[in-house]
Length: 104
Image (cartoon, rainbow, N blue to C red; front, top):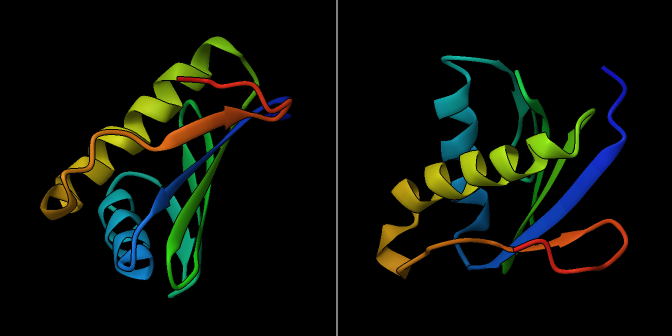
């Protein structure tokens, strides 16, 4: 797959590394995953997910070969992260397209 479409999301949290690792371990049951405490790469059927954790931000980049799959990719990330970040009343990441426009 040649990813041509990209969205980036971020979630301000002091638990970024924890959530990155939880998401990675969860998806490892279903997909190819490489991860450490500060970064991860996940290959899902609709596209790829790259995660980066700093002390106060979880950043996620989703890439796919079809623009219609971007909504699905964002939904997958948001719904799974909501399971782990429920103590922070998480509902969705702040998403932006590569060109800087709001994605949702």
